[in-house]
Amino acid sequence: MIMDFWRRHKKKVYVTLGVLGSGFLLYKLYDGHRRRISELEKELEADVKNDELIKAQMKEHFENIQIIADSTTLPHVMQYLSSRIAEELDLMQLTEKLMKGKDQPNTLTAAEKLELWDRLKILSFTKMVLSLWSMTTLNLYIRVQVNILGRHLYIDTARGLGSSYQEEEADIIYRDDQQLFLASADYLANYGLTTLISDFEAATSEVLKGKQLKDIFSTTILHDTVVQILDKFMSMGSPHHWLGYLMPEDPRIYSLAAPSSSDNADLSPASNFEQLMQETRAVLSSAEFGNVVDVSLKTVVDAMVEDIRVQCGETNLMVGMPLAKLLPRLAHLGQQLLEEPNRNRYIQVIQNLPEVELIFTLLYSSTPVS
Image 1 (cartoon, one colour):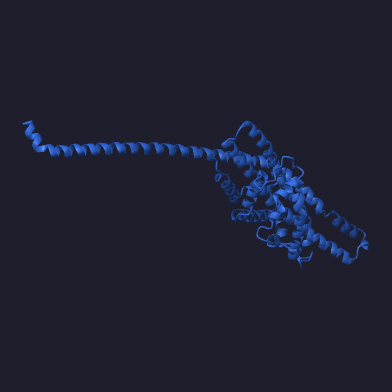
Image 2 (cartoon, rainbow, N blue to C red; image 1 turned 90 degrees about the vertical axis):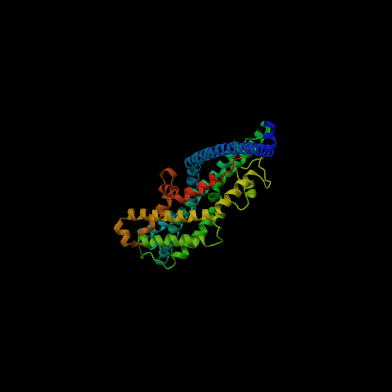
């Protein structure tokens, strides 16, 4: 009976067993694949969590870097720059001569008085607009600088270094490069200021040509005049000519001339100092940073004109006042623009701009740590 059943159905049995075997094999293959997919998904989930943790750590790290910059680097640089501008653009001599001419009419001719007043007009605007530009760009420059340095330090820590001897030797050289890199924030005050003053004076003279001391200046006229001087200055050379005032063209030559340069300085093309400077120049030359500079300058001009309006009395400056009466306030404002960060509302205005926050978010979010 069983044999008859087997003879009649053995082909079906073989087919059935073959199908079952193939199905079992496919099931095992699928199950193995499913397990691998599950493991990969778990690994991916862990990577995502790790990536999020790294980004959170990076954000915290960069925020701490900003606090350090605002409390140490920026105050020193602003104080030094303020003293250098006051030294190079001292308006006191012009003011004293005019006061003497007023008290002793015979000491100055009418032509001499007119020349002194015209000079005071040009230099008052030059000092104020130059201080505004310097404060804005140097503030942004230092923030880029310390964030780039912070990124390098974070990457070095995350990746780890080599042997203890190599680490100690590299640390000595790299520490010198870091100090030289941070010291380069004084490049404007030490090397770029004389040319910057000359170029701003030329731009100011061009814009103020034909404007008389008796001309009435309102908030609108003052705002437009400052913007015109800035635009004239920024268009005097190539699109990125202004970088030449802030940082050296050739970092290697600068490192030789810098007072902090040491015997350990590595002047090879791959030196850490040169790499840091090249990265800084790349950020400052970008279209995104150019937009940040434009927005920051316009915002500071708006805030400054508003402060002058309040100081002069809303009605006075809305209606307008003679340019001669406005000059002392402009000269004083030049000093206020370079006050220490904790007392400088213009620096706070810049730092609160969304565009400024974005550029530094891009800096730390693009940091590789692998």
